[in-house]
Length: 538
Image (cartoon, rainbow, N blue to C red; front, side, top):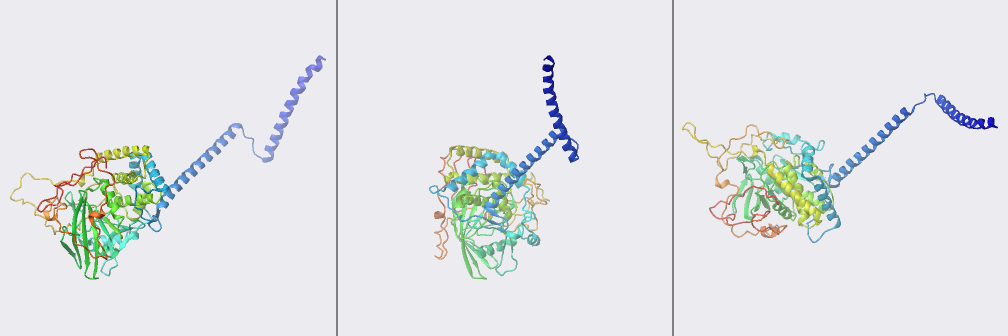
């Protein structure tokens, strides 16, 4: 019995060993059939890790590609690259009492995305993405280069895209003007440079040909001692100026506010016999390479231009910095009012497809975003208290950034006064008002927004005579001349809407400047100059 008891556990252990040995033999036979050596556990674990890493990398690529596709869809949602046209169905006039769910969702989504990025994120986005951006494959410059030597281009490196340029076809020699359509914008925007001496007549040829309803001028004729635009319009009511066979007459001149000048103009083409009437708006508080003194003045001008029955021409000096920012604001607002969401970087890229180099400075990029947010707040498309508080914080941060980053030093040089003048060194001669700027000298605007000063800049000249001063006062205007009923000029008093928001009391932060006795037109007196200091609240 003892012997049998001792044998039982042996049989069990032997049976287990036999089973294990049988499995090993089966596995070894399988390996031999495949003709490959058996892999140990470490090799199998390494293979599994590699497979897992490949799978993770694939998923990351899929997520990245889906994100890029989503961004591409955002851009395609508002702009068609092949036709260079914005996808804006209709021109919507914002109304604080009429909202749709799509409009509210679009404005709030835009605000949330901006506030999540913050000022630092937008600056980084502009520096890394927009500053070097050029729509490769979507522009040509052959016609632009041909007209550079003809003194039709103000800057050699501000290229006019041949694919979207305005072609003059009134039968006169030359069909070129440095101007581009912003197709799909409502109203249709035409962005152009400040006219040169050799392109003043071309400006009015374009106005008559396109049936332009209004011109919005964002620069002065001379800024910091440098010519920015030739005088292509009369300076005072009742005056006329002639370019070849085209005569332009100012029939009315008013100052709606301290930011804006308004002229009613009549253009007569003796060759074709056409007579055209339009309004000329000039924003006088938007310095070069920076942002305007008041965002609300820009938004009020947009509100007027939406009611125009015809294209709108916008220009500054080069026609890309202030001009591109001004146009991008309206395009962005109209996209949101049509229920289309977008990223501001995609908006600027779309505008640059039509007008290269648009939105020239990072501060202008911040102002573009802030103006769109101001529209949403003013017309109550954004009413969420958290968003409103965050927007106020964003505006304060933007104001601080703008104050800490003034325009480039080379743009604000002042003439150096000599202590003594000897008899052998006479004082420089006075420049006559009719003397044009030296158009054979090109002042490039480099891709770097700061950039070195232009080569061979003109020596500082004395301030122009009072007849050419941008803010010169003119005699008190006579009663406005009523145009024919067929084409009534918009009355300045009726055209200007009420402010978007109630003005702050005088002496409080954010209060908008108001017209005073010093700002009103008085015979024989100059208009009081306006300090160009950015209000932190605007």
